[in-house]
Amino acid sequence: MYEGIVQELIDELGHLPGIGPKSAQRIAFHILQTQTFDVTRLANVLLEVREKVRFCSICGNVSEQQTCTICRDPRRDPSLICVVEEAKDVVAIERTREFRGLYHVLGGAISPIDGIGPDDLSIRQLMQRLADSTVHEVIIATDPNLEGEATATYLSRLLNTLEIRVTRLASGLPVGGDLEYADEVTLGRAFEGRRVVGA
Amino acid sequence: MYEGIVQELIDELGHLPGIGPKSAQRIAFHILQTQTFDVTRLANVLLEVREKVRFCSICGNVSEQQTCTICRDPRRDPSLICVVEEAKDVVAIERTREFRGLYHVLGGAISPIDGIGPDDLSIRQLMQRLADSTVHEVIIATDPNLEGEATATYLSRLLNTLEIRVTRLASGLPVGGDLEYADEVTLGRAFEGRRVVGA
Image 1 (spheres, each protein chain N blue to C red):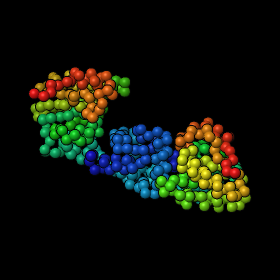
Image 2: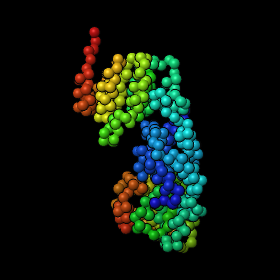
Image 3: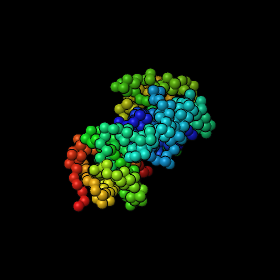
Image 4: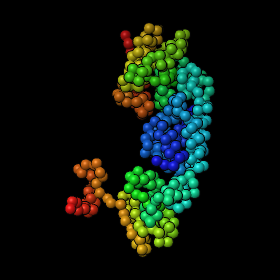
């Protein structure tokens, strides 16, 4: 145990994902000992981020305005919607430069073990976006793991009741992995090879 | 790339030790998305830590006052000084409850490759502490690696000119470990340092 505030810093850092007690200690000492490290700047960015960042009212992506830069961009194709689990996935897909449509961020995946059902995701908002006939294709780009596949199956059944082409990213993504960790080429291939799902 | 402030947060987090771009992104999204995460608290602790925390003017340990809690503690034995590389090592040793003397934090180890020589460490301050005859034993507890050993050798030569007992922590097999997994150097040290057991 350290004296007061040092231990508090270690505890706070330890609440971050992927940071165990040893990493928290190492980071805390880096902050304490490195004169060049601008702790004020990190603190201010932390405060600013919570204050400034909203989620796009259309697609659920992170945004500093009411709607995100992608939804506001008139060059994007509004007839295509790519459905992803997290805002991180939007950035991963944007990096491929393969996709010029819009996104829909679900906010997670169906996972009965974690108590996450369809109602906990922004599926209702997705259905509202599909209510007019603007959208011709929905590309389901949930993670290629158990929860992602379950979500894809659920969505494809739901969307196949509509007059919309429903596709799923091709295999080519390593099974059991996380979409956000896929390299650009693999992810680009997966876009090219997307196939119609359902009957 | 993310919009403005989100990317700034990812960049700032990426400057922390052991945090790569992917970890920085994951932490940033955790901060953004987890409503229960108290970002204001983390920001305030960061600011407070830089403002409050000093290094003990006697031993170099972290402290919220001019001198640290260990140097101020009258129950500690001032005739024993344990020399360590970093303040982190003080906490590790304190956890053993084996040592009741005082510490001296060098602020690193001699490493010609990194351009760190004896003058970059608080060796002069250590010699000043040994100037009166209070201290009877100096225990060198630098890391058992190349830099730590070099530092220990340097210190032991320097200190052996004084009338003070100089000792080094024992090297050997880690307790609870498996002999077959020990590296050759450790196993060799364990042989060198073997002791008579029983009566």
